[in-house]
Amino acid sequence: STIDFSGALHATIVKQVLLKNPSNYTLAYNVILVGRDAHDFSLPKGNTVTIPAGKQGFVNVEFTIRFLHPAEAVLLLISNKVDGIDGATMTFSLKAEVKSIEPLGIIRCRSPCYE
Image 1: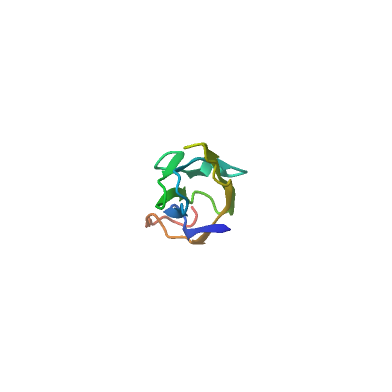
Image 2: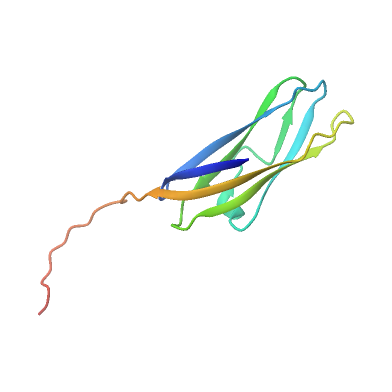
């Protein structure tokens, strides 16, 4: 599935990926960002997540829109063995784009057009 990050230029957007564990075993995942613009995305809560049996967990993904061009990356969740059980590897497409441009400030000045 695709996770969209859209907003104003220079805005920081945080999205949460909900992970559910319906099994009777604890699941653990290493979280990796790969792709052309992976360095522009971050994992503020670290790159590992553990989900106890029958519970749910979250992975936070953060993106600050620094450029006008669209950004793309892939979020990979690779299972670690816990209790001898492997979970499924999961992938999510990350896409970001600028929806608006807000000025950081306005400077007014007066000068002659020519001399």
